Image (tube, helix red, strand yellow):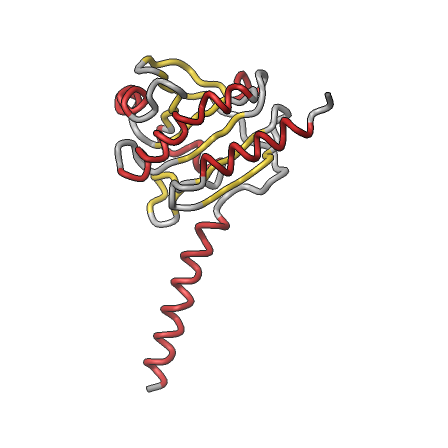
Length: 184
């Protein structure tokens, strides 16, 4: 009986650690965003994406997603595509990052991202490791984490949830708050 109770408690603790681990995996608000340059695709065309260059134009919404063309990632890409004009009107750039090949991302940028925003290839999961965005159980795959990075390179907002549902609304609100706080 004691062994069964211990095993149940251990199982509950492991489950709780797994759930909490998802929320604790991201960098903290106020931290400097690691700079990177990588291959990316927009509208089916390949180019070099530079975070520093994007930040020189305004804030960047950097979102990590597990795998192109999976259900949740396609939903999230569609949602970001619909909202990209709103982000752009606020001066923000949207870019998604996954460990997919650039050839896959060329197709994903057209079909799921609807030519609205870039998706970047994170070959070797280097960028996701810098951002503590690697999926705990599969480190070569990104967790679903969204960052809003201010033009100064500091993280303004972080949201981590395996569900794609609130990433766009939450990051848009963070960018709106950033814009509202600017001196007029």
